[in-house]
Amino acid sequence: MRAIADDELDVSKSFADEMYYCLGCLACMTACPAGVNYAELFEHSRAEVESKNILQSPKRSLIRKLTINWLFTDQRRLQFLGSLMRLYQQSGIQGLIRGSGILKLLPKRLREMEKMTPTIQPHFSHELVDLVTQSKGEKKYRVALLTGCAQDLIFSDVNLDTAEVLSRNGCEVITPPEQNCCGSLHAHNGEWSLAQEMARKMIDQFPPEAFDAIITNAAGCGSHLKHYEGLLKDDPNYASRAIQWDKKIKDIHEWLAVTGWDAPKIQPTKNQRVTYHEACHLVHGQNISSQPRQIIQSIPGLTLHELQESTWCCGSAGVYNIVQPETADVLLQRKLDHVETTNASILATGNPGCLLQILNGAKERGLSLEIKHPITLLAEAYRNESR
Image 1 (cartoon, one colour):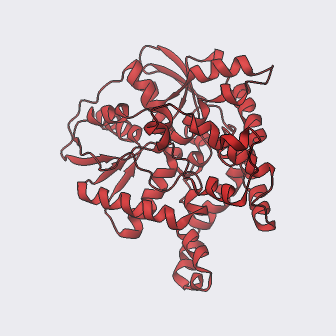
Image 2: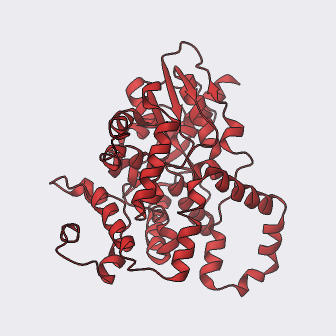
C-alpha cells in the first residue's frame, strides 16, 4: 500500500481484489503496536484502485453510479426509494411474491439478496423527531443529532430513542430534517472527492461552533465523522472548521459516559439476559467498548452476559455482505454460534449494519432473539418509569 502511494509499484488486479476482499473492520488498528493508521491507508488505496479503473466493468460502473454516486448523495432520493419499498412491504405484495414461489426462478444470489431486504420503518426520522426536542429538566447542553442514511430508513425508531435519552439527560436536541450523508460509504469505496463533498455539506448543515456536541448513534458513521480533519486538510475554506468538527463529534455512548445519565430505577417483573456485540467501527475505529456495557448494566432487570469474540466482525462491514457474501456468512454464522451459547434473549449492538446483519441471520436460523441498540434499551427503561 505504501509502495503504491509512493509510486514505487503499479496498481495490479490482485492488489485491487485484495483491497476489496478486506473487511475494513479496523481490528488491525487495535492489534498494531506501532499505531499505523490503516483506516486512512485503506481508503486511499481503494481510491487509487478506482482512479486506475482496474476493476471496472459495465455492470459494476452502473451499480456504483446508481448507488454511491446518485442514491447516497441525496437523502430525498433515498427516502423516495424507502417509500416505494415500504409500500411494497405493507401492501402485501412482498408476502404474495414470497409465498408464490416465483422467487425460485431467480438466480441463487438474487434470492439471497431478496431475503436480506430490510423492513422499512412506518415513519422516517423527521416524522418522528421534532426539529427541537427540549430538555426535560435543567438544560445543560445544546446538541445536534445525526439521523444517518440507512438508519433513517430502517431504524428511525433508534433516532427517536436517542433524542429522548438525550432530552432526559439535560440536552436540548436539534434534529434537522433532510440531512446529508456523512460520506463514509463514499470514502470506504474509493470515492475520495465525493467523500470530501459530503463532509463540506455536513459541516455547513451542522456548524460545529453552534453546538456543545454533534451526536451520532451509528458506529460506522461515527468512525468516519471523526476524521474530517484529514479529509479536508488541504481545503482552505474548511480545514480549520473540520478540526473543530472532529472535536464536537461524539458517539451517543461516549457522550453519556462523559456527561452522565440518569440510571432507571423501576425494576421490571421479568429479568432478561443480554449479550453485547461490539460494532467494529465503535471498538476498533473509536476505541469505545466499556461505555455501552456501562449503560446496559445500569438498567434494572437486565443481566449482561459477555459474548465470546465480541470484537470480531459479524460480516456486515458496510456493503461487504453484498459484495463478498460467502465470507460474510462465515463470519455471521460464527457470531451466531457464540450468541447461542450465552442463552441471551436480547443482543445489543450500536450500528445499523450489525443490527440488520444479525437480525437477518437470527431469523434465518430460527433464533428467538431481540436485536436492539443499547440506547433503545435505556429509552425503554425510561418509558417504563413514566407509566
